[in-house]
Length: 388
Image (cartoon, rainbow, N blue to C red):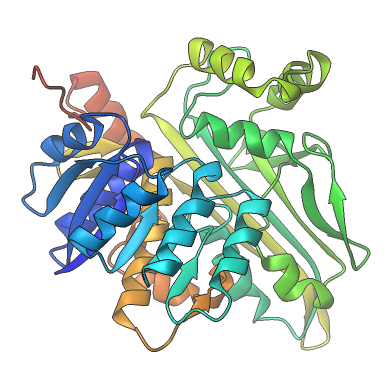
């Protein structure tokens, strides 16, 4: 079994480690800076193929020492975006494949620079958006003779919103604040531009439910660079329930908390609950010419919580972990096909969906299973405390 070092035993790292270890193809080294956190996740999985470590990955020397002692083939960062540059530098120095989940544009550019001339793979942005949605749009682009516009829309939402934000903290709070607060890349009239976050609000209706979508940073990934010269309009917007954008504008712009993100993080984490009962919405639309006719193709999917290894995992955990695990699986199974910086759109949608991890993106899911498990108190535990 190939050794994989997974950094971060949080919401996403917990499932990444479980999916990889349960597959039978990988032995996982799960590491976290918080003492006992990785062990709590490993104990909950109950698999012999997960080893837990207390490691502060921001300490270059400590991370390097671990790698030299335990010799993983690849490193997966499930850490906050601001930790990834150091991790990528260590991966380059120690000749490891590198994967991360970041949506941060500056960090991705740093990883691109680190990857120049590398023989190993550096694949950032392996989550949902950027990540899977980039692969979806890239596939649809191939169906057109001439492109006009690309719309990428995605979001993780509570199934049953009941607070003023109509939102639950389904993933990294740092990541949410980062994408709501940073400038956003877009293509407008054939030119690459930066647009303001929390602007460009639009209405979307899917299966009879109304949503709003607005500019957020990072979701476009590298698609603008790859296809920008072929398209007139390209943008990414996050999907939320109507009213959410206005409330976040008040917090971030009206109360100036975009300039005091530590305070905003404390407010959100104290006031907004987490949930396993979420839904991930993926919406992509491509317009252009096929056989001389102006046409549009759409990819629309709702992914609900699913049971993995006898426990319930949220939709955002499922989609993010499945995205990075399928990419890892494809890269390591084809060692001569990829090297250096690898953009998400270099992977084919068919290969992702046919992959044993990518199958979690399949259409046709529902919220029935998660509702029944929650009602019966049978969701299981994603981590086990020392006293359990």
